[in-house]
Amino acid sequence: MKNLNINLESTFWQKPSFRWGIAAVVLFLFLSEHRIYSEESPSRPNIILMMCDDLGWGDLQCYNPQSPIVTPHLNLMAKNGLKFNRFYAAAPVCSPTRGSCLTGRHPFRYGIYFANTGHLPQEEITLPEILKQHGYRTGHFGKWHLGTLTTKIKDANRGGPTKTGRMHFSPPQQHGYDACFVTESKVPTYDPMLKPKKANGKSWDFLKDRSKGFPYGTFYWNEKGKIVSGNLEGDDSRVIMDRAIPFMNAAVENKEPFFAVIWFHAPHLPVVAGAKHVAPYSNYSQYERNYYGSVTAIDEQVGRLRKQLRSWNVADSTMFWFCSDNGPEGKAKSAPGSASLLKGRKRSLYEGGIRVPGLLEWPSRIDSQATTDFPAVTSDYLPTILDALQIDYPSSRPLDGVSLMPVIEGKLQKRAKPIGFQSAKQQVWMNQQYKLYSADAGNSWELYDLLEDPAETKDLSHDFPDRVSSLSQSLELWIKSCKNSDLGMDYPSIRNNQ
Image (tube, rainbow, N blue to C red; front, side, top):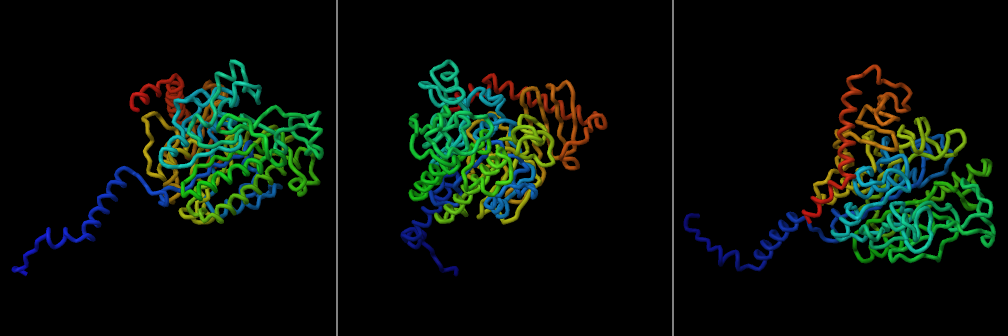
């Protein structure tokens, strides 16, 4: 051994295999440091954000076994993935929740206080913008409702050559999407461009003779700002999926990860369903059978998509989320949608207005029949997805969501960061156990123990005044933070950092 004289230069470095090994290690360290991944890496899963419109927490049998609605594919999705028992929409109405999905921030931070109010500002940083910078193909399909889509012709609720149409023009292609097939707001859930001469706004049986229909007044638009006119007949959920699937297929064929947002209109009013989907509900009223049928039609498209993902051999590496944007429409005694035992409905910050179905299927990361009582919210999508991809959020502005990756990995059961809600004069501050609620902008309070009383039947505010005081002070600070954001205080620092 003592006579062994090793010349590193001649013994090792001159060997090509050694030099290539050193180069591979250096490259690996560089990629790890800069978080750059190959297109085939499992660290870049495909991502689908699917959302229904006004679907109640009690509408799906996987949450409410008494529901009459036939949803076998969603039942399977719940069985094969992770079911959130406490999943929340960020708002009790449409547009604000949708903004939270893409920004990770409460909508009061950027002026979307209610449906058909405000728009998604250009200064907001969105999921599609971030993911596009990391090699993802990005597409949005179905409802948009985060701004108008045209300033040239009258369209939907606000679009057109008016001050409102121009002020709130904010289509998906301005926010990081490569492709889109979208409407500004609601449409009938069958034959989406048509309505009968006498339409009650809630429901009707499908038109057997389309020539007798009248224009509904809303158009589908693409990423070029052009009206889409073909393949718009029949079930609207199928019409949407007919665009989403080719987009995903093209990405798979090109070995690109995709980010696909699929926001169905159903079961938002007016609910209309085709003959096949109303058939199981022939004994129900017109309103009920069309509502139930439109949900079953969604379920059919969920099954179609799940089958396609498997046929492409990408199901295991696809993070597939499903939720609703808020609770069910109407009064419990007269509207078909169900919040089950929960108090309140759409427009309410009681549980029935914001607790919604929440499912995640991701076979490579989630075992079947997983459930969690962790309170999650749509604002969690952005930080969760960035965490899964090991991407840093490119700003110091406040986020309201948290990463759910520790929950997905089974390492976390309790939420440390409370969830705040605002809608009209309603305010809520909610942690793992307690929910502080005000209907009048903080002039009076109600306190509920959601672990013991999810139906919010017993107000504990008079029993625990110290807890009310503590929670209300935290809520006040959060509301102040939202107001500062809404005044644009987040944006100058972001521009300086770019």
